[in-house]
Amino acid sequence: MQKTDKGFTLFYRDSQKLDKLIYLLTEERGLFIAVAKGAKKGKNRFGGSLEPLNEIEMNLYEKENSEFPILEKVNLIENNTPIFDTIDNYNYLMAIIEIIIKLTPQRIRQDKMLRLLKAVIKTLKENKQQVKKLFNYFLVWFLRIEGYLPEFDTCYKCGKKYESFNKFYLSSDGSKILCGKCKTKNSIEIPLSINNFLKVSKSMPPINFISVKFDNEKKIMNFLLKIVNINGEININSLKQLS
Ligand SMILES: [Zn+2]
Image 1 (tube, helix red, strand yellow):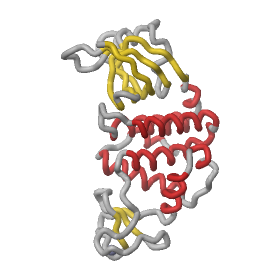
Image 2 (cartoon, helix red, strand yellow):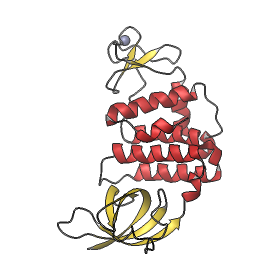
Image 3 (cartoon, helix red, strand yellow):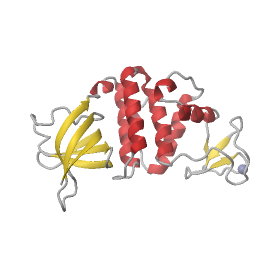
């Protein structure tokens, strides 16, 4: 059966013979893998349209008993390859792609994440030097959308109210917060300024967010990445390259 869909290419890897497997994030299917037949050939009908983070329209052919749908026809809506043009941008964007692929459940609609990715890419296109800021924005929203961000509310054990001037901790499984008295050995310190960061990121589109200054931005990023690592039980390879 043939179906149309619309969304973003994320990543591809070589499959057998002349094919490529393409990771896609689309309106109808969310995250999934499709086969692009013949895409490994030097000259092929897909051209550059399958490069990471391009926005495309596609026809998909689903055969019974086959593992992946076949990518029949691709129309490039928005060529986003220019946003990869510095080493910093490349590394942060690859980290975004890896996080989506490794932590998002497959074949479930991801309307919010699709909107997030679209907004981040659009903003980055016009503000290429803001990649770190936009990476942080992506991270906090990704964790929120996928349900990985705990409530920064009260200590899970004693009920003490979380105030950003007190040191609080994240439980080692990443799901709850604890006060200084209730923390355990493996608890992770929460950066003091995170409350403001959470509030501001929630209230603003990325285009406004990039001009807000925060204390401890690097610490906040590392903290959010810890939550990613705890939940994915993975190491995001592309993160090793981040500056
Ligand atoms: Zn407590």
